[in-house]
Length: 207
Image 1 (cartoon, rainbow, N blue to C red):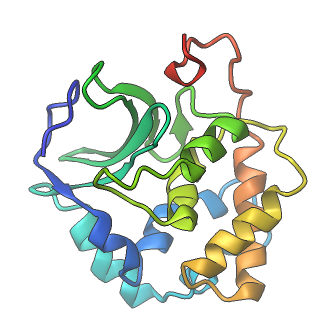
Image 2 (cartoon, rainbow, N blue to C red; image 1 turned 90 degrees about the vertical axis):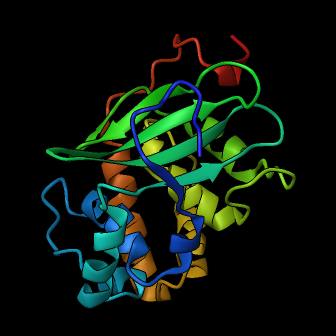
């Protein structure tokens, strides 16, 4: 697998891991635990358990196989999520991609917390809902939305954001009562971030 503009890892398609028990806790649980939460987040919030999480983490953080999750969009750039499994420098990188055009552009990274320009709510929804059925990658809308969620750097999310997040979490197997709790913590985390810079010349805006 090749990613134009990002050629530092042994990439493997990761989409098959999305339905494995333990994936979503590995991917989102850390976002639930920041900010002095009164209740300790647990994998059961996502319908998983600790054994699931430990087993899948060995695959996700394999230094010889870096899982890549592709979120192609029909109209405009898509996003690629890469587990950057460098020894001593583990993290997750998020790239905007325009297949056949320009090199991938970094828009964020997770190294214990998020850094980067990220996406506004409107941009995130545009990509999540912009299915590109002719391209390889994630086609389920709920899964696309959750993969993109760590990129959200917009404190002004609409009132419908919580319901959309709960629906996405239940779609991937989270119990409804804990999905609501997880959604509350996830939104609290992303809306505390620095505001997305509207002057950023994003390919999403046509700049």
